[in-house]
Amino acid sequence: MHPVSRWGMIGNAVRIHLETESAAPISVGGVTVTPWSQALILSFPFGQLVWNRPTEVVVERNGRTEHIRVVDVSCIFTLGLYAFVAALSVAIAIGGARRARKAA
Amino acid sequence: MSDALSDLISSIDRTQEQAMTAMQSIFSAARVGAVYGDPIQAGDYTIITASEVVAGGGFGFGRGMGSAPASASSSNGEAAKAGEATGGGGGGGGGGGSTARPVALIVIGPNGVEVRPVVDVTKIAVAVLTAWGAALPTLVRIGQLRRR
Image 1: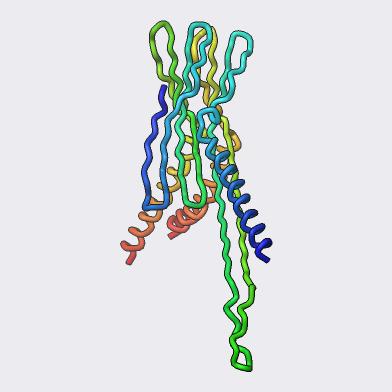
Image 2: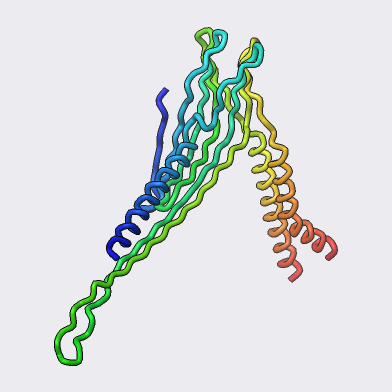
């Protein structure tokens, strides 16, 4: 499978590269498993940042193909927690501002 | 003096080459092989680890050279000979780091293929403590509003 590559620029300095790539297929007992990953590459004039994560596993068995997503449970939980706290803070701030306006 | 400048320039060039080599190793984190481990055979099961990899690095270099201006004319009116004085300097630095965290296990067995997520208890505990610290001012504010 060929890697899929997309890229763009922010201004003239930062290059953003999104690359989706598969590893070599693994065959075990009539089942062929192909893992896929996605890498976000930020290239600056003075350095580089790479974030690479697993995305899915493609399973081929008896002529059928199945896509199984790799879910990062820990990341989803932490992002959900941060989003909840942020939303709660915004709601409290808006509620406090409304109360202050009513009292005035 | 010119030998010293040549040595300085060549050492800066060598450092730049080393930095480019280091950047290539950081870029290798973008390969799919960095995310998925080698298959491990355990009885009837084959296990492949899947991890999240973050790597970053940066470097900077600078060099400058200059020559002394021609000296002023001497007291007897004759132009003085220009000196051979030259100067130069250079510097460079860089740094980088990487981190990997297990995300899931891919288990291939007699019953088929299963993707089992890995729960990172440390990451969740740190997130809970951070969220608690961020929510504390909000909770104090709620208490103040209720008292009014």
